Every structure is written in C-alpha cells, then in structure tokens.
Image (cartoon, rainbow, N blue to C red; front, top):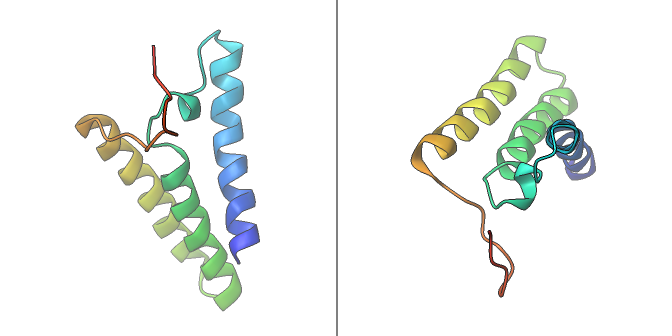
Amino acid sequence: MLASSALGMLTGIGGGMLRDVASGRVPAVFRGELYATPAFAGALVAAVVAHQDWSQWWYGLGAAICFVWRVVALRRGWTAPLPPGTQLG
C-alpha cells in the first residue's frame, strides 16, 4: 500500500511540476509549499479503498482530504520543512 501511495503522490506532484516548469516558475514542491504531503494523504486513502475493495464513492474522501488540506495550507501559509541550510529567494 505504501508503494502505491508513493506512486500516487509522485503522479500528483508531477503534473504540478510540469505546469510550473512550462510556465517558467520554480515548481511549488521546491518552494517549501505544503504540496506533496496532502497528495500522499489522498493517495494513501485511495490505496486503502482499493485494498479493502470498498465502494468507489470512498475515493472522493481521498480527493477531498488532498484538496482541503492544500487549500487550508495555502490560506494559512503552512509550509513544509526544508533541509537545514536551505534558503528560499
């Protein structure tokens, strides 16, 4: 389940990275924004739903968790921890 969650997270942030690179911006995942963690949480819920063979309606819970967490993080200015010595522009 963790491997499929990690792949789901990578798929989720990959699209955002391509969008940012195509528009000439530094990808959000490298700016310290809380981006990958909500994607991982949503993917983990989706992996659990698939593993438990629950109704497909439960996939909406994973999407909602990811979306709400990301929006709240943007509005409140939450950021992911950066490696020591890293400074953002």
